[in-house]
Image (cartoon, rainbow, N blue to C red; front, side, top):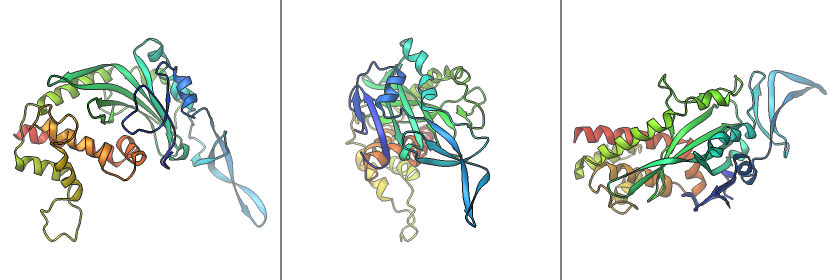
Amino acid sequence: MAHNVETMAYAGEVPWHSLGTPVHNDLTPVQMMDKAGLNWKVEKQPMFFRHEGDLHAVPGKEVLVRDSDGKVLDVVGKGWNPVQNEEAFNFFNDFVMNGDMEMHTAGSLQEGKLTWALAKVKDGFKVFGNDEVESYLMFSNPHKFGSSITVSFTPIRVVCNNTLNMALQGANGKGVRVSHRTAFDAEAVKQLLGVASEQLNTYKEAAEFLGSKRFTNETLTDYIKAVFPNTNTKAKDPNSISRTAKTVLELVETQPGAEFAEGTFWQAFNAVTYATDHVVGREADSRLASAWFGANQTKKLKALDKAIEYAEAA
């Protein structure tokens, strides 16, 4: 499997990234964890250095070690609390057992430093006739210093498998993030998950609004350039368009699902998400990591905000 993805399993149809080992779609969270190759634990071990032949402990620092192969994942502080993969997957258990969700995909990125699970929620919506968007929840459990546990709302457009990874917004307007400096409390996080349904409705409203506002050739180009600005400082024309922006413009009318709300900012926005998920980048695994946890996650959220901005001005 490609270098960014260490292990992965998926249930149901082949996912958009076409990576992983297929499994049955009725697995419990712990069974999915096992099939995804995540049935291992992490533990903190003392960190030493050698000076004049003697070993000395490094004060305030420990190494985070995977028990299955002794791999060192990171260096952490003594106040950093590891969350085991099994704890993360058990977070989904009540939802799955009650029939509210089913496990969909799970895996390990960056040689075990980031593990995650994606569950399909029995919810979704259709717009513009038959343009269907399904709802998912993603739980990411990083085994690395400086990263928080996150739970996010991930709508996926069925016709083209475009994804959007959006942090769940609690009552304080902030995303659901759990620091490794406090003990993981699954019940406390679950109390915030009611907002996932609200975010699905908000996203549906945004889709309907974008699909009601038409672009012109000029506003379409300006929108794509705003999302993918030309960063080539040697370009002679400061208004020139970047290579990626050109690619996205070419995809507006050829992307899967282009017939839904044709000529609107919904079509333009989906050209951006399609390009970042399926076209831009050299390999599927690098696109996956970037789409959910990296630069392209931020890029797609910016694209949504910009699409609404341009639609409001249309």
